[in-house]
Image (cartoon, rainbow, N blue to C red; front, side, top):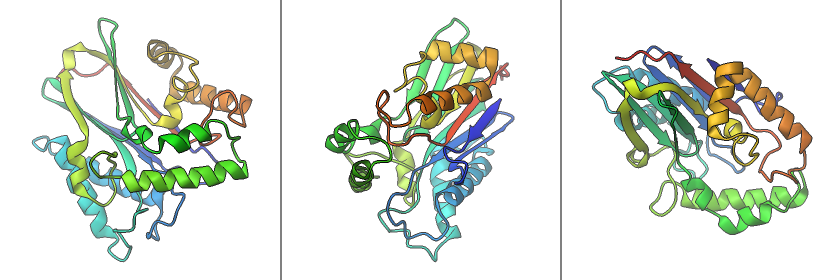
Length: 270
């Protein structure tokens, strides 16, 4: 089951997701707070990148990092008129899961989360938190600023500039943008299919119900998905956001963010 919705109904959803037999891809386009050098925008980039990843990952012999690298290169070829070397060129976090024989392969790059629920009741959460390790001083400052205030807007811009300075370079963080070699830094792995009961791929706008809201843990999150489905969980995220519009209880960069949850159960055993 899949549910996705924009953080602001008046703006395009910069998340992108697709599920097909044996394959699922979820992307979270990074918010552009500066010029990008691209006339197309983040939503366009995420849609094009997602489609390219799906086409590449359908070839089972190709490893997932290679699929992502080729997709980044492909999308770059679609808009040569844009300044792809601009420091703010559009980018996206990526989550991929694929069934390959008797294994479930996964890839995470930047702040997508994958939660694997085992048949024995265990939970493994795979996420890439390197971006949140950048601009620490500004992030601390932001925690004390009201959402929507002039002070927050100025701090967000400083944070974005610091993030861009650390993007796709050693000691910083890695995200799908214009450089295919970023895929080499993705978190990848594989687990036996027979051990997996449920799997969830979600963007950080949906994961906030666990962190920073703390309204449930990952065990409760998976149980709620089983009982109520992803649409209800997104409703609960929006309900919590509406109760804390200024971010005083749960400091965050945006009142509401684009949010996507993909939940798969009854997984074929290969």
